[in-house]
Image 1 (cartoon, rainbow over the protein chains, first blue to last red):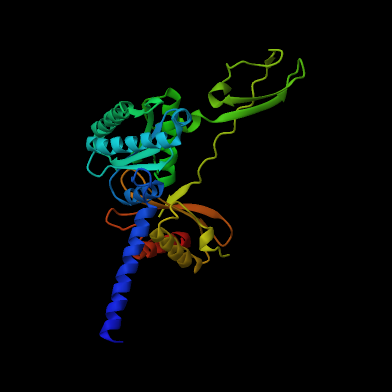
Image 2 (image 1 turned 45 degrees about the vertical axis):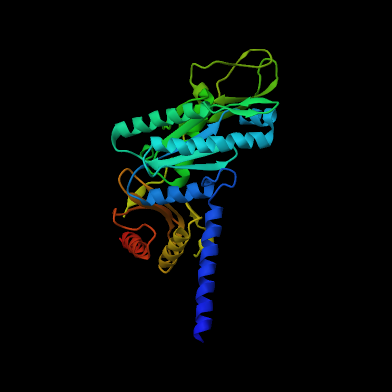
Length: 258
Length: 93
C-alpha cells in the first residue's frame, strides 16, 4: 500500500469517527431546546450509579400544559418550553458544577446532580428546587393577539440514598412517584418518600348489592381498606361488606452476599 | 439449560459496556450450567452492587448480591471474571 493510500485510509477513519461522534451527540440531544434528552439522562444516571458518590434527580413538569397548547397553539407553547429550558439552564448555578438539565419529551424536564454531604446538602437541594420553581413561574411570554403565556411547575425529586438498592429504573420510578405527589398538590416541590410506593395503589371491588341487586364497580384507594371504612351501594346506599384485605406485596427473594 | 443473552433482562440495555459485561458473565456461568436470568446493577448506601438472579441446573432460582469495591470498574472484564468466580465458588459450597 502506498503512503497516499495510507493517508486516505487514515483520513477516512478520522471522518468516520467524527461522524459517529456527531451522530451520537445528536441522539443524546433534544432538538427543540438543545438540552440533553431522555437517552442522555439514562446514560448519565448509569454513569452516576457506577460512581461512588450519591446523586439526586428532579423531575420538573409544567402544570396544565395541555391548556397552554390549546389556548396559544403548539408553536407558541414550544416557545414557552424553550424559555423554560433557558431558565433551567440559568438555574443550574444554584447547584453544584456537575448538575445538568434535560428535556425528556413534551413538558417534562429533569435535573441531575451530585448530592452534597449530610442533611444540610438535601435541604440545600430542596431550597434550590423551590427557587427553580419560582423562577419558572416568573416567566412571561407575550403572544400577539392571544395574551401572555405563563405557567407553574410541579417538581418531584429523589436522592440515590433514598432507596436501599438504587438502579436506574428504581430512581426514575421513584422520582415519578414524587412528581405524582407534587402534581396532586400542584405547584410545589416534593421529595420522594417510601410511603409513596403504596399510596396510589387501588383495589378494584366488583360485586352485587345484597339489598337492591345492583351491580357495581368501585376503585378504592388502599387507605380506604381499613376496618373502620364504611362503603355503601351507589344505587340504594345500603352498607356493603368491606372488601377483603389486599394480599401483601410479594416478599423479595432472600439474597445471599457473595 | 441455556438461554440466549438477548433474553436476559437488564437494568440498562442501552449501554454497550453493560451488554458486553452480561454476555461475558452469562457465558462464564453457562460453562458451569448456571443460567443468568437477570442482572441488575445499582448502588446501596455506600457501594455499587451487582444483583444477580441465577437458575441452577435443578431449575431452582436464587438471587445473589455481589458488592464491589469503590476502586472497581463495574463493567470491566476483570470484575466480570471475579464475580463469575465468586458465584461459582458460592454455589459449589
